[in-house]
Image 1: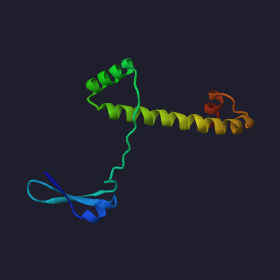
Image 2: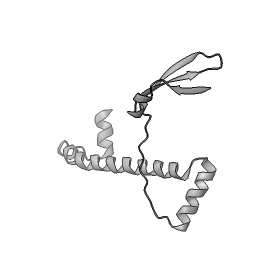
Image 3: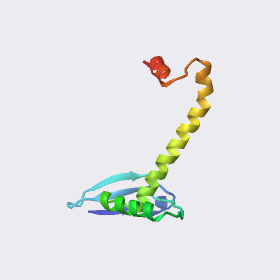
Image 4: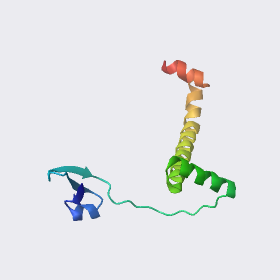
Length: 109
């Protein structure tokens, strides 16, 4: 299967369309909105044990070490955003008499 860009100009700006050519020569057009991946490198230091665990998980899962670290970072950032939102909302909830998770569940059920 061949994939060829129909507009190199659009691709350079991060938007493009591809024609996927099947064996019979028929084409299916697929819109691609984010072709240009902008990445940054980050250097981190790992202790020997953590590095071994990361390498072992990489081998077992078939995912790269970078992919595993990115996933862990995404999860940690999501958790931090959740905690920040919870801290911001907590005073408003307390003012409404919502003090526990059970109060939340009772209110939304």
